[in-house]
Amino acid sequence: DAGVIQSPRHEVTEMGQEVTLRCKPISGHNSLFWYRQTMMRGLELLIYFNNNVPIDDSGMPEDRFSAKMPNASFSTLKIQPSEPRDSAVYFCASSPAAGSGNSPLHFGNGTRLTVT
Amino acid sequence: DAKTTQPPSMDCAEGRAANLPCNHSTISGNEYVYWYRQIHSQGPQYIIHGLKNNETNEMASLIITEDRKSSTLILPHATLRDTAVYYCIVRVKSGGSNYKLTFGKGTLLTVNP
Image (cartoon, rainbow over the protein chains, first blue to last red):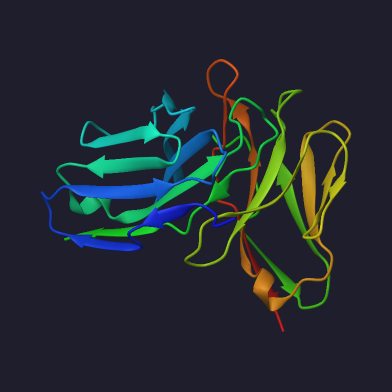
């Protein structure tokens, strides 16, 4: 089991540029979550998918953020245009089934984004 | 709204048991209590979860009070590698039959030699 795989591990970009973060969930997991972590706000849930369908995107900060899950083994989180306040560690997590309150989330090691 | 309250920090001596408390007084009958920890620069790591009964696995034990308004995570023999932020989370419904985890600030556990 390779776990949840995120890429890149680190991303440094200039303000105004487009940023794409990638996530490969654990095979067989039906649910995928995107979190953002900063010192000020802690871990925040941005959006999650169940069977590739977005279920709750109430945590997405604004229209500059978008997430897709074209198939069961891949998801992207895109920021366009990026701003310095988007600097954070972005985590992806997957779970066997969001439809059960009894399924742990498995997290990747995150992407550290720095926007200058 | 994380629905849980934890002390911001705790210390524990290496080799001793670490008991981390959590209050979740507004928990509903079908909501599970989850514990995760986050070691610096890594993603959160699942530890254990429970609904009503006490639970034990290779990492820890979870003691849930009978009224379910609080719980305690027990690391029986803490090591230096257990130094981390520990999150107690109530998994709540998010539309239909879906659930989500909302993290609070957690407890920074420092294990001292």
